[in-house]
Length: 392
Image (tube, rainbow, N blue to C red; front, side, top):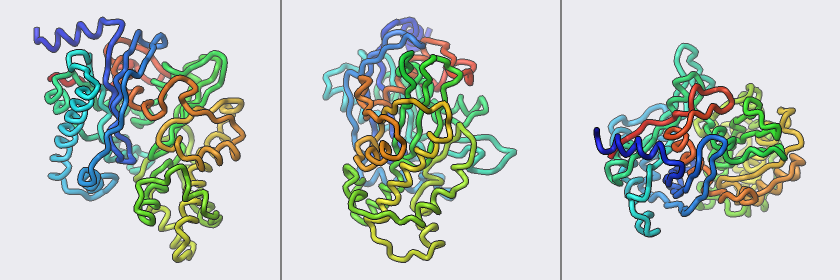
């Protein structure tokens, strides 16, 4: 038997595993690396994040990704090379992180790689009803496995698409496993490039749980901050706090057809981006708006999209919100969310999880399920076997 097939079989039978979870989101800021010690499987899973760090992408890598990110017309050769390059880069980052933490590669059972999303195209976006939902993440897991010497599970979203779903959000499965409570209705809100949440009812009815995108997260705000202030993001929401509301712009943005679509639904920066904002300004005849007012309004757009989704869900009432993602550090978002929604809003640390590590940890949990379990979350997967396995 191939030594790695034998190792894979041995790992799958272990009750405790050490898995490196990886996440690189649509904000393109870098790679999240979480070393997770996982016991059990399914609803008995327990996770401890032993080590975590985010390693930033270089300016050159960001520029290279943006050449193909959420674009209809691209250089296919550049995409093919970048697929390999990102895989090699992620492997290099993992090796460096493990060395810094004094963790030997042989101590790691597997790597769970989300990859770098470059396009999300469900039918609701591409509008071609005779063609399937689609999503694409680059950063070939074979390169990660080969260059780290560690079994790697990647490309998690394709099984979800293959079974007729949209490939996102996948947080539902991990959120149910890690955060469901019999004592509290919980909303696990993630504000990344796009905002999404998982609704977990206290009655532990897995089929009543729901995960959906809300709309914009940090993307438009980050784009505006980079354009006008040469900063990657609005630190603590300071710029937003200094601006005033452009009510006609907010009203126009909230008219987008996405907000009238049924739940669950997914979207991406293909829709919610700077072009959407610029087109709305042009239609309204708003010329040379104050940059702080733009960022204030775009920030409220993010919050209103979340509040709108919560108000449309009767089952969301009497819930507590636990926030993660880069947006959880934006005080403007959190202040306005509490004011507008009426919900109690807590940082995810309240539940014992580093909010920055959550998404990477979720993919470690999904890898553990692929290896160990047949957990059926929300009744919408025949099995929890997500991801493709790459041997070193």
